[in-house]
Image 1 (tube, rainbow, N blue to C red):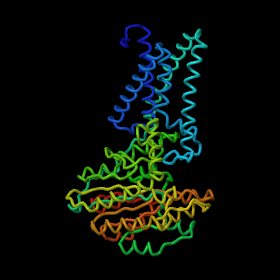
Image 2 (image 1 turned 180 degrees about the horizontal axis):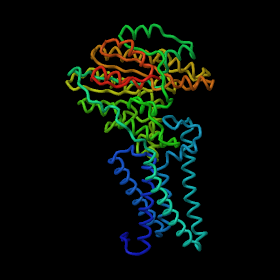
Image 3 (image 1 turned 135 degrees about the vertical axis):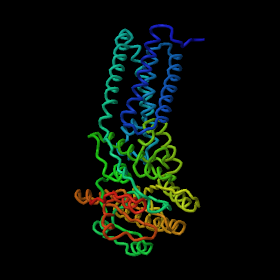
Length: 473
């Protein structure tokens, strides 16, 4: 039986190359994620890289009987395995990289598989053709891995300087006004624009819906405005009660900085310190609470890998409209939450991907036709149905939990208008309403609802006796 124990110089060099590659792959992931992933996730991913790469090396070395050639092929295949999703996106130019796949997904995936196999064949052939240059090729390969590792170590430590030092917003000592803290429901309707924008850009005003909100004693903003038009940046800001600054010029680093701010946000940290139970029905991880469903691949440490790509392909094939079932699942969970009678106070965060694209449903809740209707009109039609969902949720929560606090808002606007100036302006507007146990917010406070950063500032001031400054837009 062949022994794989390190017994000679060649074996030691090969295993050092293998460990260098594993370190390189892990460092790249950690550098890009900028502290977003937990220790458990990192350790799990490290063992996955080690286990998969080592087993693959043993198999290929057994077949080829050449350690150096085996390690070269192993590293190639391992890299493709752990970065398959990114490589797929490179070939699929028109792909929305978050949730949807093109109708030709199987053909494209077959093409990529063929390219991978072809690369292996070419490398195997080239190995024999250039056998006399074998030593130089191996030396160059070792040098490349070594230099890459040094560079990535440098960048991994340098990346820490991109992080913005955070000053706790909720550091003020306070005296509670009441020992009966309310349940808090925070519901995001993704891409829901403001009533003013609906009037201005869509020529739409739903007076019956607005009258319903007033009848249910909701405090409403007609002109709420955001500094951002991207979900992670918006949510990081709203949950930390201030506009998060971009830590670098690199978009991926900015994204992970926002994901870190969402995961370790001020609102949840503060409420948990007051013994609130956290219920997370969103697409983001909140502290140790798992996300309810996957929308951004970056949320998972496996987001770049081939298994993650296969998972999403399988889900797409089994359920052609996963976003629709995700919305219904969140709605059901949210309504079920309101029916739970418990002495524990809860903070429930739900994120519904509507009226966000794809524009699946019309105003009646039926599937929209795939015709030449402009997206703008399809968006409006889905928004009308979203209002019905909102009415259902409001009725359920208020009837089961009348003293609750309910914050319902969009994260940003539509983002699809033709005119660039209008598109930019509209994309930064959002729907923003608040129910405070059936109480009306004083007029001098109500005007601050135009800035969504104030949502939790208002709640914490009213219920926890804090004195957080309310900020103008």
